Length: 283
Image (cartoon, rainbow, N blue to C red; front, side):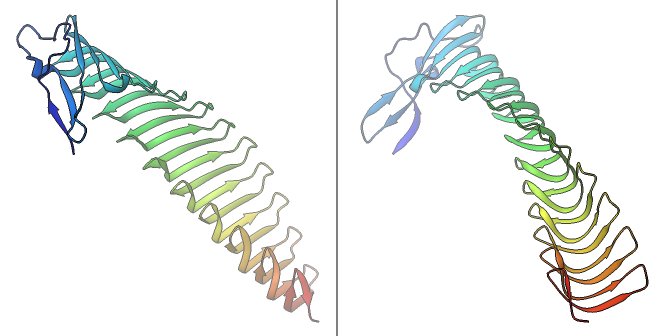
């Protein structure tokens, strides 16, 4: 069993820090862990730097240097983890709280607000590949309003919840395509409008990042499809109007006319019957 205790032990204190209005004993200044199974001991060493500042050397190579109050990190300080991560900024009651910057050993960087040892408030996070998020944080996660610029140049701006895109948001692809609408669990879901760089426009339902449900697709050439979608394809009951005035109403499957349908041509001709693979099957 491992338990956290205060140790009274004879190790070097150089000297133990004490402010003008308080006196700290060795047991106040040295905190460690005893493993009763093996009898091992771990200690911290506190060095008084003067002016209310201290250097604290923890087990496993972690080091803190900065303001020290009531035997806690409080004020401005720098913490270096043994694995190479570095935080520099505000502390309160031994936790990161206020403004601060953390540089992770792999190259990612966060700079912004902290509360209760977690990213909270406004902040900017830069990944080592160049991806950048700037916006709201809550309890260490992206939550609220924020803008994400991906390394490939694509941009998302809108709502976040539990570290994923959720709510209303706008996504701009580097090729010029633009989606604006609902998001859920990091994908397009709900109602949304997609304007392609080609000029084609889809407006309607989305599920799991694809067109599914009811929707209208307007081609740049003037043709209009209105009806059901399934797994990003036209499927179900639909109405299709060509720019020349021809109209089709009926069944679609796998993005083509298939099933029962009625075709009305602008010259007055009509066909009502079976369709298969976009071709009339009957007279």
